[in-house]
Image 1 (cartoon, rainbow, N blue to C red):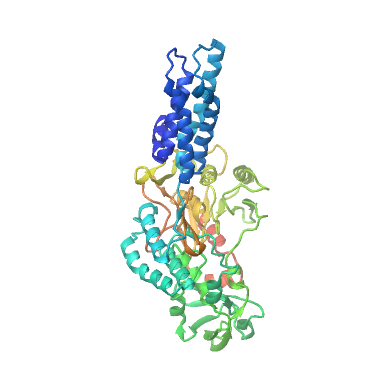
Image 2 (cartoon, rainbow, N blue to C red):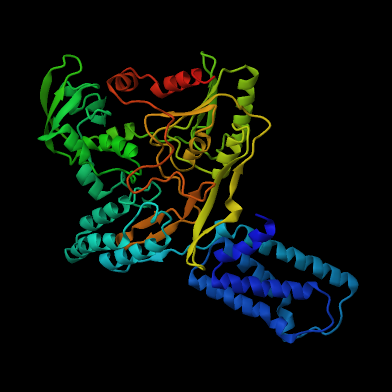
Length: 565
């Protein structure tokens, strides 16, 4: 879309106050920029009117970057023209003075043009203040706002009226009983029903004093589990010195019964997770992490099949305070020293690149340049193919993703359109300034490429596999799809709820070339970038990955590249 079209499209992201400020400031700047003999007295009062509107906008709550641009320009124009309100200037300015005034006024239009061009990204998205309401009233207001503004309501087929009918009685019960724990768990259950990894209770502090989290899953037995494709529940982690370890349980053992239930039933009934589980793959892995969690002091009986003897055994285990060790060990957390991009030449002649996140760091201010140099080095050494690892990549900057993608494609490709809810039009609108197209770079690597993914490849981290999947020379490899949370978080929906909880939701949709939502899971947990090569999670691959410590996905990627002619 042309720049002119972008300018006019920017209006839909303005508030009414911002439209008034734009019109007044532009009128004043044009008036003083054009040398005319006739003076209109009313023009001298416009900057004061604009200042009053700016103050009203601040009181309305708009402190967005877009509004600050207007406020700053308004203040500058007012200070430069305030004398004219009290003493109108009748004399004609000298040519040199008129030229200077014209140049300054033209400079003043620059922030207006930039504000129009980037209005979608800088727009005001008001915070909803429901914290002083009752639990049920706040919930109803929250549900009503999300019904209009949540980007994926239709995509996930959310029935807002049904949610209101289902959860309002629970919130009413919580307020009648003054039950903060019931209120919190109900709120969490409601949010998790959307299956969107971008939805957060920002300040719930799960690992730092969250009373409910500690009460329900604060105790561990020293193990973590994972369900295979055939339904078997296997132990993939045993903490040294834990109750499970002292009972003789080892990694690779199969759980048959858990506290009176079949292992499959116990696994299926797990609802706890740190974040909403967007896809069935993400859900399966997180259920395994939380299956062996319980309140501290809980006694359970476990029946398991020993991997060594193949005999069925039983053990009594007591949950102890392990400081959430099994949860921490099974969820990778990036360290400040982790570089965004690293790579090496493998012994088999393939190049390997690990992209941990799509942001710059103190030690690597330009990750795109770092990747470009790495690929150039690989190319000079004549690599047989390239493996790009975005497993556990939490995302970052879409512009960085598109720049890196340009190093890996040989033809121009559409990356995404972005749409947001416009408070002015009352519907979702495409923000034309955020349409991203991948343009092939002259450098980089255009040969055989494999992309490694897992259920923790999330947000912008899903961009590369979504973009490159289906290309003749590319294979996406993994046990599961990516996280299925590709929504845009530019100016997020934020809601203040009772008991001090701050909720945050994505505000934008990523659309493909057909203007259809891409990447985000639907209401059934289907979504994300699906692997071209889906590795089966069976007894063999489980043992290779979790018992022998082999990188199964990396091996599968090499095998996939060998098959590409």
